[in-house]
Length: 326
Picture 1 (spheres, one colour):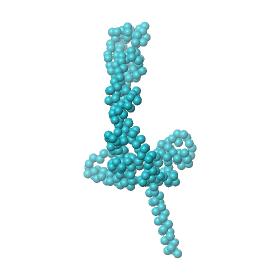
Picture 2 (cartoon, one colour; picture 1 turned 180 degrees about the horizontal axis):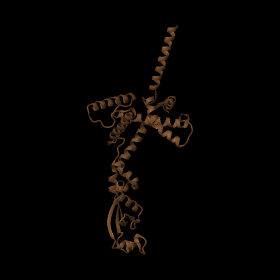
Picture 3 (cartoon, helix red, strand yellow; picture 1 turned 90 degrees about the vertical axis):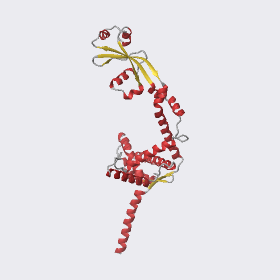
Picture 4 (cartoon, helix red, strand yellow; picture 1 turned 60 degrees about the horizontal axis):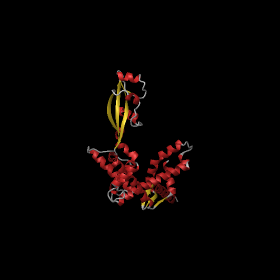
């Protein structure tokens, strides 16, 4: 009896351990014939967890997240949708001959190979760019980004589903011309300088003409310089140029800015002309517009693949995975 009891106890232990291993490696769903493992889903949960926690914290909902049914459902939906989205990208990449990373095990093996190569290079004193060793989350993100870049490059070639023509770019430019035309907009200005120790400045202070426009009409001898400023350069303006831009942003042609005091001098600007060059704006924004269109096409293409594919999931296992993480 003791032997039988011991044998029975051993079997129970094996079943218990085996059950735990199976639980750790069990699949929570499928995209076509590609499995989504619990470990993969855990990773997606962790990536979305902070956002969900912050949102419900900001809403001042009491109780733990595990007790909040709405939060659990939101976290589960977001994590599952992203798991399917990523799997679809790897699915398309395999179909296009870019790489086979549809299996979670293959991703883990590829990471191990990459880390081994990096360790060998470091031991030889060679330069390694990026991390010296990838963790799973970092490698997964790195692999996904590289796969997406390779896919976009291939599928955006002529006759590909993401191809973007010159006409596509021009049409988008015309549709949102006000947004893009800033890059081809230039202001022609007259800068009027008044040294504080000058006669002109004294006359300006005591003038019966209160506005710069009126004063300038009656003081043509004031020092004037012509300047240009381009809206395309606004992001790289220095402090002086930015102040100038702020002063003229809302001016009408022929009107003057408010006074600017820089210590020894006082000056203001008169807007002489707004020059809009659409061809210049299109040229400067061409690649940005093109990439925007291609990215939109990529999003739509991946979604169309998902919509036409079979997906299955175990609601019970998804919920179990959520509770294991939070």
